[in-house]
Amino acid sequence: MSFVNPQFFWALIVPFVIFAFLISTNKERLARIFDEKVLKRLSATDESMPMVVRNILMLLALFLMIVAMARPVIEKGDRTVEVQGLTLLTALDISGSMRSTDVYPNRLTFAKKKMNTFFDAMPSDEIGVVAFAYSPFVLAPFSSDKETLKMMVEGVDDSYINMGSTDFSALGELASSLLEKKKPKILILFTDGGDEEAIAGFAEILKSNKIDLYVVLVGTEKGAPVIDENGKPFTLEDGTIAITQRNDALGELAKENDGAYVVASTGKEDIKQLVSVIKGKYQNQQKGEVTVKERVEYFYYPLGLGLLLLLISLSSMPRRRKV
Image 1 (spheres, rainbow, N blue to C red):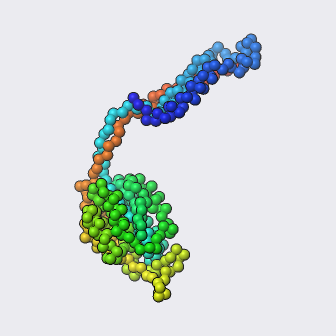
Image 2 (image 1 turned 90 degrees about the horizontal axis):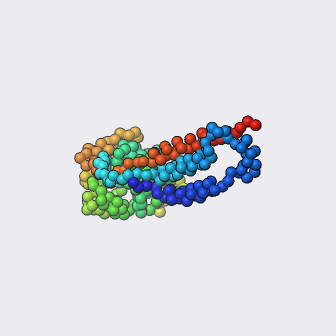
Image 3 (image 1 turned 135 degrees about the vertical axis):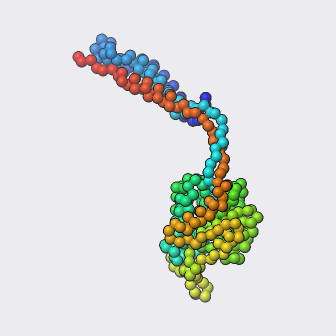
């Protein structure tokens, strides 16, 4: 037998021993004040449990509760469990063009809602999240806890947006590192796209690392002005307002890279369509194995016995005699 939380036992056993010593050696307060004959008339009736026995029961109850807190278990070794689900890496675009308002209320917020819809549609899958623009970074490690993933994505606000150019090659390098030991390797972008020149190096990285690309494109072909951090349209050197359109080149790259893309729209049909494609393609690979420790818990035995002894000791508290 072993303990899951032995630190609780050693942290509490010392004060317990001190407490037990004080209880066993300390004379009753009443015995120090009253004469023995007077105390006898004020003491409990013969029906009550002797003080020594009651103290022993209470101390034994406390000791058993300490043992229960340490969680005694019998280890039965490791067991391999088969789990269902894929491992996917999602990436959220936080470049300056994501402030544009051609979708309500803006591209960034719209993309975040689409990511949350995607999380809901993949309940048993392990998903990681990165954010990317000029320099990509991990927003949330791989996890099957979708509520935590949603919370991390919701925390991305306007202050995260980077007005610099998007470095897709840096995103590709980060994705290849995070997906290095995963199989299959799946990357899903939530973005308003990128031009062919910007994604040229990205395409090579995906192919060399055998990463399947899927894209959720946000924005419209008509486009909208680029908005700066002050909420004003961004102007070029010649004074004209910068307009950004959705660029579908990434979608075409996804198709070339054994993936697919959808154009984000209101409702959930776009994400359902994408999830259907992903699950259909990898239906024979949605299995994995994890090793878990198999153990038998025994904490409820000392806990139950301790509570019983505590109840017995408290139910026998002395009652005053009527004078």
